[in-house]
Image (tube, rainbow over all chains, first blue to last red; front, side, top):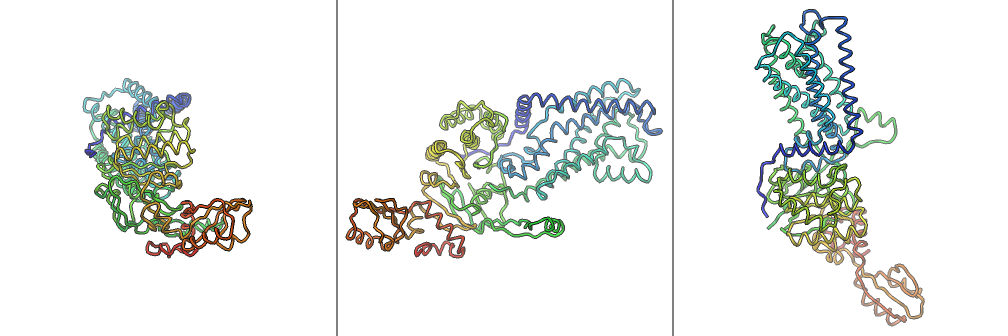
Length: 281
Length: 343
């Protein structure tokens, strides 16, 4: 029998992954419920904390434009980006190191599909959906409270930049995970992802002065985590009138950064596959 | 038509040499010593369509590494290989749709889900048309007697049942070439028997090309006409199963039963006495002396029953591996005829 080479159907495979993951999470429904509740609780505690901060100050830094509800829009964007990254990729990137260590990556490499796709989306963490919903609720609530109304351009661009943000965080995550091939065990490097992405959780305006500026430049142009939330969040809170050159360049740069990050992660991933040596039988 | 062509295929690994002790471990943080392990050292081999070849060798001989190279899971250090006209480590989808690898020690099915869910995933990955998928699945599950277990989570299956499911998952896309790495390891006799029967039937029916590694001689003797023995990364034998005994064993085993109920003490002078259980005894005798010893036995002793057999295959192979370990240079393919002959 001669098999006809056919193009793999990525969407159907993704949907099957999503379905199987859901069936699996339903089996352990106790765990699913606890996961959902604990991560939602974490969000609510954060929200309470920031509400408290805005009791003391009307704005984050003088003249930055990040008042309470503007910041809530920022927070909602962070939540949306993070829950997408967590739901789609986090468990998979974590598992990738394990696949390398145990040699089970063998099975992935046998499949007639893109290996990075199979590794990255194998398991969908449905419990992250709770935070996505919370993020969207917060988004609409805060939008009702600010004076500025985003127009149709922003409505179109916002999901695009959310996608860019997710792509950047994903790339960073899979790059760190792929380094397991050379280190065999690299839990700490994976934890590094959390430390770095912490920088993305605050508006860029706070990185100012002798100390803040180098940080801002580094985490914008070298490891572009600062554009992840800032670029889409800014779309919602201010008119499309750039106040500085950096402001004007940033949305364009975000697109480049997303494409560049993906390309870099793909390069590292493929290098890792060449170095993969499998594990004893 | 050759389905598998291997030329000078080699794979070496650099492994970290860890020294014993805490101090040495700390030193190892700064300066590491590495050792190069030659897992496969330049093997040549051709397999025709429809052949069922056994790959034998002691642990660490390079069998699994060879299968992994042919599956494209790892890249070789040097040499070439073509399977179905493809270079495996290029990992082209066109190639990956046409073969399968089953590893007895690893599992690819989703642990917490019923096997059927993993099968459906394979259906999507390989884009198997629904009707064909269901026919193949039902046929395979019936043949392996696991149809009633399709809906049970994989973690609740016995090892034998799970292995059958693994095998089915690998066969759903009707591969033309199948690499089986110890598919019956750890299984009970009944499960082994079912899998052997299944493989024999499936291979004959579909004319697939199979490369099998196993430590169970039963698997090999039931399934394979051709046997390739690999040791320390080199092929030391490539031929028929019976040929192994002719080539590697210079001995025959004479089984005796004596009339007077005793085993004569002088038997040791004729050959190596194995398991004397009066009135029976077994005598291991060099091939060239069999006639002479038989004549002597029949003339000097009261023998009730006598038979001459080849030594068990396991024993021949075990002795050969031991010998290879002691004198690796003698284990080149060219040296084989002398091997074990004068032992």
